[in-house]
Image (tube, rainbow, N blue to C red; front, side, top):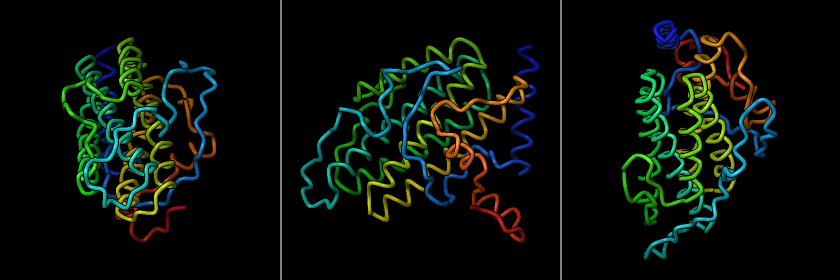
Length: 254
């Protein structure tokens, strides 16, 4: 069974690599429209309920701006930068642990993308002269207590089985999408919005990859965990610029 699971996963990535699906794990330089999602709801029907998970963008931990008082950002914009920086590290760290646990290549592939997301946020934080909340690159170490708790919960769940690990990956990407949509809506800084666009479209691809592999292996439809139905359909049907470039003569997009 384990061997068959791995073969199916590798097959899934081969199919995605050759552009037969829009679920390539990557594409973080792509651009796209901002999604319309604005809510965070998990009724816990058919899915594990993470009641203690921080609502996207609402962690109580806010590391204050450093000595650079000339920054034009307000507290909300700074808050999102700091939260998303650690949130991207949380995603990377969970995927590192789950790859070590199960050896599934989907986690190793997306780890690289999450590292790129972390680096993009670090660059923004440095540009605006804000103190970086990531003080250690060690796996599982966070300054934000809520993110640390979420990390522990997700690692525990994903360690139960490879199927649960795939569901954890999808959960993280849904969570990220809502958070980045919210952060995008609450800034008018073009530089920041451009990075957020790259991040949320990367998360679209990651979610699609987890859903694709999950459905291929389990033989059942994936059930959204946080996104509203309309938002989930939007994300799953979204065509990235990378996909558009592969089919330049075909009109696509929302």
